[in-house]
Image (cartoon, rainbow, N blue to C red; front, top):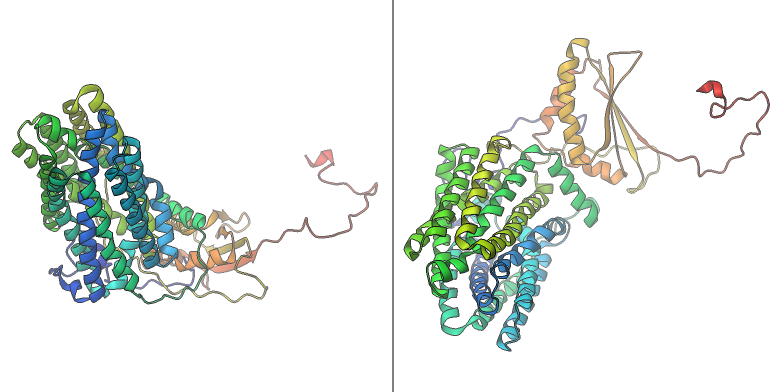
Amino acid sequence: MPDDARAQPTADVAAAEVAAEGLAPPGGGSVSPFLPLRQPIFRAVWFASLASYFGGMIQNVGAAWLMTSIATSADIIALVQASTTLPVMLFSLAAGAISDNYDRRKVMLTAQSFMFAVSIGLAVCAWLDVMTPWLLLAFTFLIGCGTALNGPAWQSSVGEMVPRSDLPAAITLNSVGFNIARSVGPALGGIIVAAAGAVIAFAVNAVSYIGLIVVLSRWRPPVVERLLPRETLGIAMSAGIRYVAMSPNIRSVLLRGFAFGFGAIAAQALLPLVARDLVQGGPLTFGLLLGAFGIGAIAGAFLSARLRAAYSTEALVRGSFIAFAVAVAVTGYSTVTVISMAAMVIAGASWVLALSTFNATVQLSAPRWVVGRALALYQMATFGGMALGSWVWGTASAAYGTEWALLFAAIALVVGAALGLRYTLPPLEQLNLDPLSRWQEPKVAVDIEPRSGPIIVTIEYIIREEDVVPFLNVMAERRRIRRRDGARHWALLRDLTDPKLWIERYDSPTWVEYVRQNQRVTQADAAIGERVRALHQGPEPPRVHRVIERQTDSLPFAPARPTQDMASPMTDPRSA
């Protein structure tokens, strides 16, 4: 936190982040989800994305049902879902770092073109009748890799397509579009697979990418000038991990998201077996069950704002865990399609309520410079739970039957709800996480390069004895913020000859990292700096020293010749 900064009280809330997850905008009222369609580029991308969503849902049905035809093991069938979610767990963080450092339009174009090529290969192999279970899993895994690369760039680029005032409605409209495809797409996929086979389903998915590729190729977003050099991929990823590790609220979300993904994925991973074995149906029944799940998701999206106003964050999440557990248990024991569809409606609503609440908590706990990576880590945790759950529940289904596997998943969801007793989610606080933008790069009298370092910073405070305890408390929070934003080796020192003198010390690996760290300070962080300065009793503001470490062992020098009257503290036994 800059030491000469002053907090600016403000009522400005990151409205985009709030309304993005169904929260009411500040001051009440509602925003029409159709306003962003006035923007030509957003309108074109939205409709092209809707077509791509439909293609993806149709492809999922085709892949899942084809696997039931060429594989005899339940665990292999369940791995179709795992192969789609596993890449998100493995590559989301790298994709988030890439989207923060490179042209997002080009990143999306690369991802869409890659998925287009893979989908063509999938359709050709299916048409030539050379498909094997492991080859099908490989294709779905590669499509999942493209999805992992595309996701962070797409989420971050919406703000470049619409004005800030329309951003909440734009994100809401994206959610509506996806859930429309989730509701209708699986049923349409079931019809296509039943009438024409999986090959046509795969071909339809390949064609669905073309519109979005054309739209992105024609889009020319404004180029944002970068004041600092790009972070390398490794540094950017480590910065995101460090931020999340030093943010208790986000850590709780990651744990709960993993628990929810692990238990809830059973409903989708085992749904082909539910359609085929429990309710004695075919691909159309499978599509209807997926469609019921999508209808529930739409209902949950529209009810989310009202439910968040009536219940706390933790109560809403626990209720979603329990409701999903009930839906999974009912699905496991139902032999009637209508009853199973009703359970899927409940599961879909619970799915959206839980995941959107997790997503909102992450977004409201991270500033814009790292929100993509924070969301990527959240997705890695959640999709990692889904990938592991797909394998576990598929194995359980092969060993004990689909009914028992779904019951075990319901028990896991109840355990996930109980985790809230220890890892309670925080309320959705409306923090101002905009950059403070008050720190200016200091002028130095020594020639340094951006890569020069390490840079060591010390700050001197004069603290009265009666203020020591509150000073230590507020410095504990400052330590967390400093380390979260990139400071290393933070320490708080007290002068032995002057007890009122306290020294804060930390270092940054290079000068450019020191500048970057200070530019990450948010409006909310400034309150900590104000509390520290209020305790400082000196006639002047806290004194700041910035020094650069220099090595001397590499410099040429003439060693002194030892004499009999010279005693070295390293060799004199009395020095011990």
